[in-house]
Length: 431
Ligand SMILES: CC(=O)N[C@H]1[C@@H](OP(=O)(O)OP(=O)(O)OC[C@H]2O[C@@H](n3ccc(=O)[nH]c3=O)[C@H](O)[C@@H]2O)O[C@H](CO)[C@@H](O)[C@@H]1O
Ligand SMILES: C=C(OP(=O)(O)O)C(=O)O
Image (cartoon, rainbow, N blue to C red; front, side):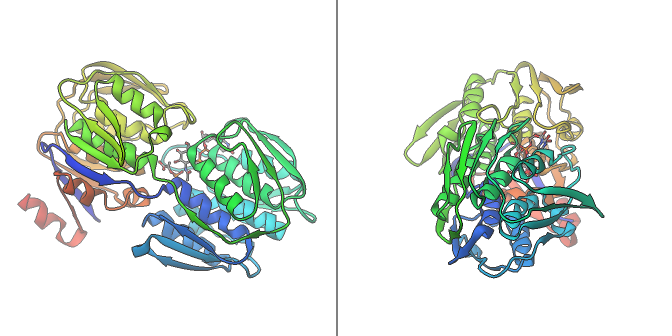
């Protein structure tokens, strides 16, 4: 089992470049299935485990996928008849595999996808995805761990109000509606930048999507979509993670490629804590000096504070001064990292959907386990300032969403190393 070993106490300085966004590339690669003429060329694809997984899903559906990690490029040829079934082995590994359901249903009139079930951050139902397909004329059924959707002929455009502004449901409905007969209107749609990226991609393929980025999205169905070339937007969560890493070490780091408009809530919270954030031509500069102030944070759908930055901010808040409250409203159980922070002497308690923090904590290095992908990054970040050595395991979570996280931190000056199982114990003794 791989471990990341980090010794606290180094200040981060320099610059780091943000990759293409995981949460944009996954829906875009799934949506590439919609093209029946020509190939899709997707650029700025990050070399993540989740990208390998979605590529495997696409291949299993009878598409040709050629992946060039050196060029950060994936080429997809989905012109042959698609198969209709996404297997449990993929959906289990990565929940976003459910995003192939809309495209398959739109093209084949039938889709069968393994039920995703719960995961490390709580129960994640897909009722809003299915409600959308049903409104467009699909019949939904369940059996043997699968969900099936069937239509008689083309899906029909419909008006759909989402009970929650679900990112995945908005994406699945957008792709299904792209080839439907007539116009679909999604109300209370998710407004994340990744939704806008997906809408742009569908439009580049010849589709007609308007209003993405607002809470009403209008999709006029077309008969056919064609391959195109598309660049993935920068990863605002990776950018935010490095911003927090810079701030916690009292460093001075330029986050190249970060898009400030995608990160307003995070930037203003970090400024409220006393961190200096300035826009430069190449990205965002983060500088931190002196004592940080504790703040209150509540996660919300975009443009609110992102749940995917909650655990990293919790790490930062452990070094601030005063009482702070972090409230998670997006996922029902995204506090698994609290126990791990406590192993590092983090002073906090869970009360319902909130964590009350009395800071600063006297952070101490410890053996900790990543509980989800953002928690993995957050524990490493806490390790950057903890006294002594922190060892983080369960790194398969980290690899889902971060490219070379340890190497990028090391290049900024962190004392960090990733070691494989066979040499792990030996090397740890040397650190
Ligand atoms: C691959 C990807 O893009 N993942 C992101 C996406 O996940 P994902 O698309 O799964 O997240 P959703 O926006 O769908 O989920 C938000 C909330 O809505 C609930 N819900 C969702 C669908 C549904 O049919 N019914 C329902 O009740 C969920 O349980 C959750 O409480 O958005 C999340 C919220 O910003 C992020 O944390 C994830 O990183
Ligand atoms: C929760 C996340 O991703 P996913 O929806 O892919 O599990 C995340 O990126 O933090």
